[in-house]
Amino acid sequence: MGEEAGMTSRQWMALAGLTLSAFMLNTSEFMPIGLLTDIASGFGITEAAAGVMITVYAWAVMLLSLPLMIAASRIEFKRLLLGVLAVFAVGQALSAGAPTFAILVVARIVVACAHAIFWSIASVMATRLVSTRHASVALGMIATGTSIAMIFGMPLGRAIGLALGWRMAFGVVGAVSAFVAVYLAFILPKIPAGEPFTLGKLPALMRNRRLAAMYAVTVLFATAYYTGYSYIEPFLAHVGGMEPTAITAALTVFGCAGLMGSILFSRVYDGRRKAFIACSVAGMVLALFALRACAASFAATSAVFVLWGCCATAFNVAFQSEVIRAVEADESAVAMSIFSGLFNFGIGAGSAVGGFVVTSLSVELLGVVGGAVGAVCLLVTVGVLFRLMR
Image (tube, rainbow, N blue to C red; front, side):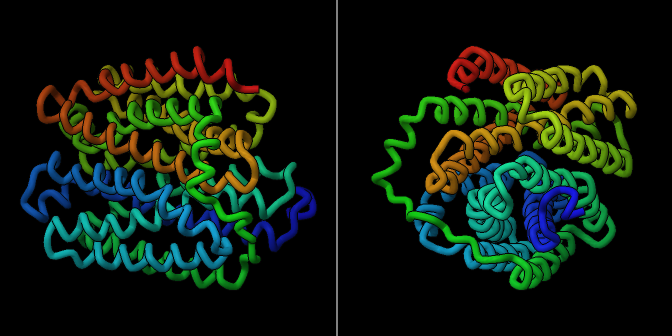
């Protein structure tokens, strides 16, 4: 396979390790969404109160991404990644053993530190492992790790949580991540970090109008997405009347659709960049607006999830590619850290908006409110960003 694709087996194995790392990081990020009810019950709090954990995690990533990446910009990428995975494993262990909800939130902030740096360097590392003409394949593999986390990781974590308790789900993720770190220590080549990034370079980076427009679209997209997705488990249970096994199956469909999005990116994106981005945003908006109308039918909900999951992953990997394309090589890790931070700001904002909708309006309106934010995102994408893209 390596010869056919023009990549060596060592490159494939290194990319596989990065893909597995992405799988573990995103499994950990998504898992609380699938276990929200059980975590809330375990600490005797409401689902909306437990949802604060998702917001805190996302906003911790937002606040920490840039300063941590600037501080770490002198560190060779392989050594940095292994350190990140070690911190991640410790955070998972703390999450599994947390005696109170407050300590669980602190443990999740530890995990967020690892998340902040990982998503600043993962895509950059993937593209530097291969030649320029294979960059889309490398980015597609990282996106595949995210998609597989939603196909198997989150549902599997949910299944473990339902069978053995949510604590065991966190523990298993921590143990597997330690194994992945050992694998990468042997297989991953050294990747120089490049010129250290200083705060003095930040104003020039932020004067990049195309990059600023992408960041604005990123915040709007993530806010819309997570307004609906953060509370998708109680939505399916209360509005759709689904049993726990059906909810797990529906979330698996969502993840499978994400895998489709990464495949489409690898095959279609380079020749149709604007159309690809426009379709990914418009598809998410349509899915969110259709969520309430389709909730009563598992088949209809699955169709919505296919569209939503595919478009969400397609957007994410396309924008990672655009961020890297918009800056100089030595700026890419910091530019990606800002992208990751802003995406997580949107996750936190979406979770907060979704929590407000659930507690003050109605859980039925999650898709409508998320879709309205998504419509604004589509207008900014077409009306502003596309005029700056070349």
